[in-house]
Length: 171
Picture 1 (cartoon, rainbow, N blue to C red):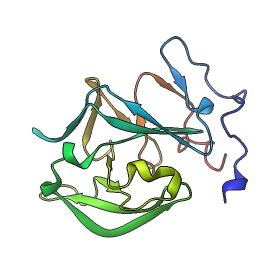
Picture 2: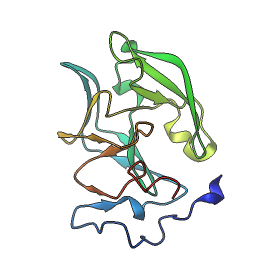
Picture 3: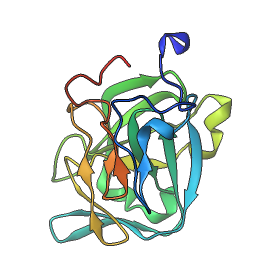
């Protein structure tokens, strides 16, 4: 599966939007993906409740996708989350367990209890779906990655088009 990708972040395709100062093109992100530490404040809310707050997140940067932010479990209200029966598989990171919110949506995020060796740094860390809970980076409300399946976080610094938008799947 890893060999099927046409774009690997080494050359931005002609259809990609060009970033301006302070922006990043998802087409410049690498494949295989890489982790990047981020010290900006990240906050996750459900209604008035703060579910997580961190200044030590890790972003996964992958060609064609907006970043996903992973938070250390110490910065998350773990007592509010529960594992569902759903799982998913990432060719780079491994098997993810879906997380629901007690008294809230049945699926709000995910965790990789174990990862493939290249992503061991995020094992046990939690990411959230910005379409299901409110996610903020440096006080900016995150927009969800289109398509319903993906969990990428779109902020004003991200330009695409991104995977999940019409015409951008299977690239």
